[in-house]
Image (tube, rainbow, N blue to C red; front, top):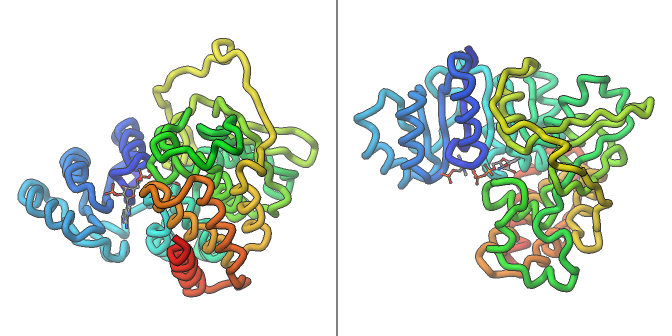
Length: 382
Ligand code: NDP
């Protein structure tokens, strides 16, 4: 039995993770749940999964949860997310699955690794900001970090065919998002409603916009660098609209191993929870004959400048990932609020990166200060 804390349980990944826990009945137990505001859906999760505790970051929502659910559950209901190490049953926890959106996931990820627990990480923003700090910390503490992002899970799965030192390059696949074939001149006029319609994946709002700008791939380039100890020059991106090949590794002898499957986040989530084993999962079979063809295109960095920004941040390292991530979070929010045009998201991130004074080998404090600086800088421009 693996005991799991699920951070961000009410989101798209959080709900898929709970589906996986249902599928793994008897092998996994939810010890703790966290989310931000969605107290009604949290109440349903508490009833079904009977965790030892549940917390909402938003204090008003936490109050509603306590009022409406407190007398019907034995779970300890926390107002605000306290230190994970202080939560009931923490000593017995095996895996912390972080499905929080954005920089809000940083603190709990660090705490997980500090406490030598396995971190299953969907929250890529944390690795983008502080991979340079978290990865060595995990190594020193003997804490495992397992990717949940489908591309990085694909790399982990492909890596079973070789060693890190034998990697020549990794290729991250990108669906291209809803606007890949749009003319460059049409991109400034796309609306949030259009951008929120992803062709292959059902996801939270922020990552859906990141997929449309290709900033999601930029974040994944940086994430891959830290997770697999790669040089930025060993990472490539290819546009693969069908999202069947989730990513691939080319080894030094020219063999390329790819991981393929029906696009469903339950696959990488379950692999992270059962790693290194595989367990059955009922999904639509992959029918290649029905699909007919898998296609690939070189990414267009002229139309989608975010990709180049991702490569640059991966190359220079230090605090640049934190600057890129924070600027992007503020810009995406502004786009969703109709304050800026779609193309201004990448422009604002570029501006923040150009103005940023890089700190090499930063401390956590410097990473957090950079995050605050970039948010302020972008807000000033809005
Ligand atoms: P969602 O927006 O759907 O969900 C985000 C979750 O985080 C919600 O449960 C939200 O709570 C919670 N949350 C937000 N702030 C806090 C906080 N301060 N403390 C605790 N919980 C908080 O996002 P996704 O599930 O789509 O994405 C989550 C992460 O996974 C992102 O980093 C994303 O990049 C990554 N990812 C997502 C994929 C996908 O298919 N969705 C694929 C690969 C990676 P509430 O609902 O109450 O607001």
